[in-house]
Length: 339
Image (cartoon, rainbow, N blue to C red; front, top):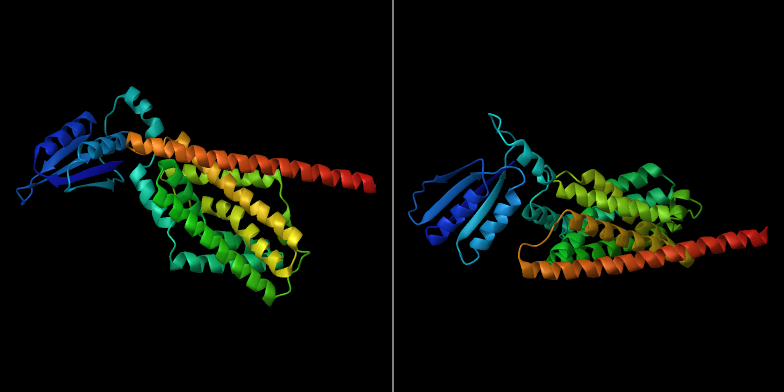
C-alpha cells in the first residue's frame, strides 16, 4: 500500500489535480489546511493497482505548473480492514506488487552510479575471486560473488533502455565498463604476484563456453529484473548476476597475465556472452512488466532503444550459439579421428 502526498500552489490546476485524484477511486483523501495561503496539500490513501495511473495523470496535468512535488510514502499496515469488491480485487491482483516506475528509477540509478564504494568493492571482490580461482576454492569464488556490486550497472543499462533514458543507459554502461576494466587490471596484477595454477578446475571452467552457462546468465538477468519490478530485495539474485560476470572477468585477467591467449579469448567470449544474456533477459522482463515512459514521445524513443538493444543482444547470442555448436562438433570430430 502507498500514500501519495501532493504539494502545490493555489490555482486552477489544483482543482484539476483533485479531479484526477477522485477519478482514481482512492480509499480516502484529505485536503490539509496550511499556514501558507498560496499553498495546497493533499494526502491520498491509494488502493493497490491504481498508484501508477494516478501518478502519471497528476504529472500530466501539472506539466505546466512549476512549483509542485509528489511524494510517495509506503504504508506497512492499516486497520480496520479495507472492504473491496472481489471483481475489482481480482483485476488489480496482477498490479498489486508492481513497483512504481519512479521508485524503480530512484533505486536502480543509485545502484548504477560510479563512486568510490563501487570501485573498492570491485577491487576487493576481484582479489577474492582471483585467489579462489587460483586455489580452486569454491567458497572463495562464492564469497566474491556476494560482495561484487555488478547488479546495479547491468539493471541500470537495461532499465535505461526500457525507458529510453540515455543518461541512465550511458551512465550505467560507463560504470559497468570501468568496473570490468578495473577487475581485469586487478586480476592481471595478481597473476604477476602469484604463480597461477592453470590446472585449477575453478579457473579452467571459466574458459569453457557452453549453452548451460548462457542459460544461467539469462535466468539470472530475468530473475533480477523480476525481483526489482516486484519491489523485492534483489540482493540474493545479484549473487547470480555476479556469478555470470565476476569469475569469467577475473579468469580473463589471470589468463592475460600468464600469456594464455587461447584460454583468455574463450574467457573473454564467455564474459561478453553473459553480459549480452543478462541485458537481453532483463530487457524482456521490463517489457513484459510494462515498464515504459509516461509520455507518447518518450515511449517512442524507448521502444526504439529497446528494439535496438534486443536486436544486438539477440544477434550476439545467435552468433555465440553457432560458435559453441561448431566448436563442440569440431572437438568431437577431432576426438573421433584420434581414436
